[in-house]
Amino acid sequence: MPDTADSRSLAERPLDELIACHECDLLMLKPNLALGQKAICPRCGYELYTHRHSVVSRSLALVLAALLLYFPANFLPIMRLDLLGQSSIDTMWSAVLGLYGADMPEVAVLVFLSSMGVPLLKLLCQLLVLLSICLKVGRSYGLVLYRIYHELRVWGMLEVYLLGILVAIVKLGDIAHLAIGTGLVCFVSLLLLQVWLEVVMSPHQIWEALAGEEDGHASA
Figure 1 (cartoon, one colour):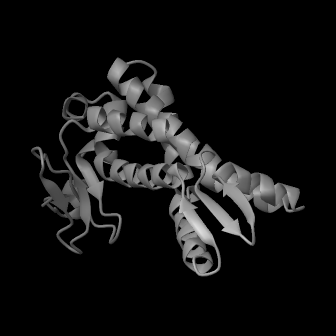
Figure 2 (cartoon, rainbow, N blue to C red):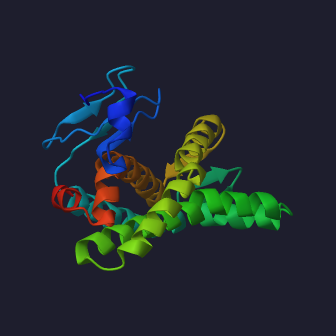
């Protein structure tokens, strides 16, 4: 748990030795954590961060796996629908094209960005950030890309589309024959990998590694 101090002693400290709670704004001394330890705010109990082991290598493996699943998840069939003697095979990309063909270009662009464009940009930003740390080159660009990634996080909505797919399967299951496609398996796997990546890719260790701090880079 971080140490708190009076306002005068905190004012005399360098900024890199201080940390503020994201929930209650309590300013405190930044703790030195061992692997696996967590920093908890003493006032509200909010978890400030966790010091994880092999952050960069584990995150890089997850990013590469997610990129391998990205194209199958979006371009392989999600489901096959047989209704009244007619069959249709749907993918995420065909859904975007269908909206555009139905004279709803604004909705098509929004669906494309939130389900395909932004998730891909997030993964590419993460990949380049991790490579800049591993190769020890272009860390200034890595800082910019990591900021962009944090801005894009609110626009990625894969879980919303997964929920929509599940609702459609339940609704149509009684009136049509549905067959789950490989694309849905890849889509669910991609979503789970991204959630796992959010947990593994410890932000404070990534920021420290990008800043070139020895302790941060070693721990990452």
